[in-house]
Image (tube, rainbow, N blue to C red):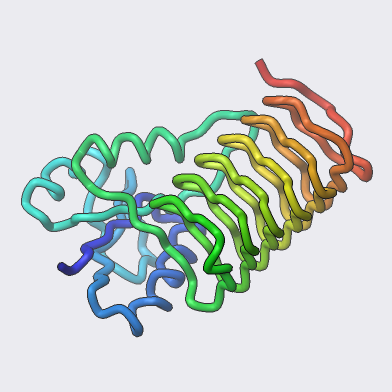
Length: 218
């Protein structure tokens, strides 16, 4: 059965998600990108605009779409529009679709939940577990036995050594590096280029080398 996929979101990240799916379509003819769902109709989309969130139930009911993927990045501070939209699409009757770029290197012994996004050049090594709706962004590296929580975002170029645990809704920023065995709490934000050498509390915002908290959100 053909998977008829809608991308929820229509900004730059959503267009990169489109290209990740597009890279896999050539080898899997049972995937069709139907279009984008967003509050407004952008002008530079590579596929049709389907309407705003209110159309989800109708599109699922008539099988215009059967699957969805989230095309938004993260909001710092533990808020998760991604999680909200993921739940909304599930409730509408769509199934989560994993957008995985053909150039990503993924161990056959890694476990990826439904609805994950893995961008071009990303590496996911043996024993890693990636939970639902997480983003492993461009050229990010996830080493052995790491766990990435639901709705978390590992930003472009971030490097996680072995046995790192990233909690749900956390953001590991562009080019950040995490020492092996570190635990990053749910909702935490790690700034771009940070070097994480000790555990990070939930909902904290950390920057620097070594990374230190500058704020804990309520």
